[in-house]
Length: 436
Image (tube, rainbow, N blue to C red; front, side, top):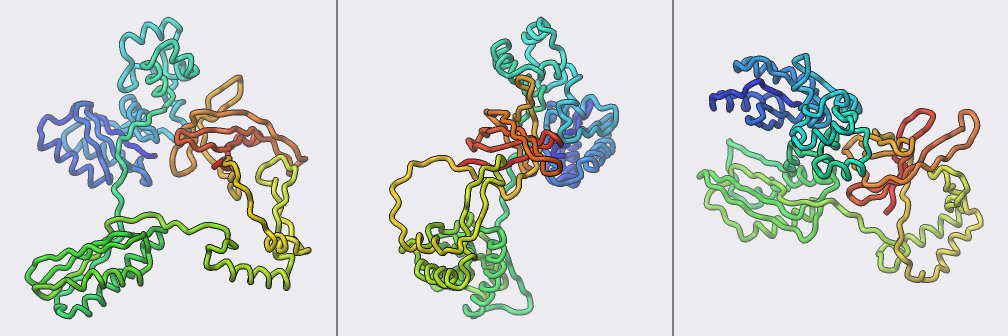
């Protein structure tokens, strides 16, 4: 569960009580959002036990003198919001994947904001009064008949609510500090020794995250309680401690301290993902090209079958279409040695397959009697599909080796083309790969 929506019959009129409610809610959930006009409080419970936090928030509202509070817990904001309003229990939780079923029997007026008044007669004229009846229509028909307002309500009825209730979390960059009270540092070499220790902590944290910093700040607290900040910059992102120690020494050379140092803090100000340099190992422009050629030559002489070649097969499943076979003749090595410059190639999309298809949660729409993916969740985030082509049925094999799949080529909202399929026997969905 991601969101908790706490609904109050009436928001506290006293400003002090309202502030106290928000302050105490922060002790229960890491992030909250107050909406006094809607008598509602939101809590961000990603990665936490939503039911426990929702129960604690209801009890908190009761302790501040507000009776009748109810909470809804769901992965989609509109569902959590409606669950809090209509739930018979203090806490109503809707499991992921059940959002549309929860909204289906409800009247459209429970959506927030509800449809504009002019839309009700148009919907009633075609026999639509519940969320499920509206959600069953296709988007083209809704847009043509009911316009932009109809599309907005149609999306909410389908539990499609992309509202950013909470903004992105501010990134916390690695930092380290050391403070002492028994002695004071007056020698700059001693200062550099401490800085080197702090750099080890920070660069190790960066390396774990596969990131490199290109800006840091050293902050010194002196015995007279004054502070000195020294910015340190590197020309390119790196997590190499020796590089940062060299740059830090250069930055500290012109710095003088008016008093002894009692505390040193180091924090990263800017960082970026480390990008490994890629290219042809046998390109003369790479310093390792000659060593790689020599190593490959020795390997071919001693164990020629260690070199394998990709062979394309006629297997219908993409993940089984390539086989790696040994090259005992050594012809691959000769081809590499006699390789000729390749002409300029026309850019084209290439399929990138996952080592093993990844299980995903998929929300579907019905098109010509077939379930077609509309959006999916890969365990980390949701992706909406602007287009889905398929199904392409692939089947074969006998017994345990049998397979029957419906493949779909989808285009996500961010422009990435993905390959999804549904296992017909188990009705499970998988992400097979993508094109780039």
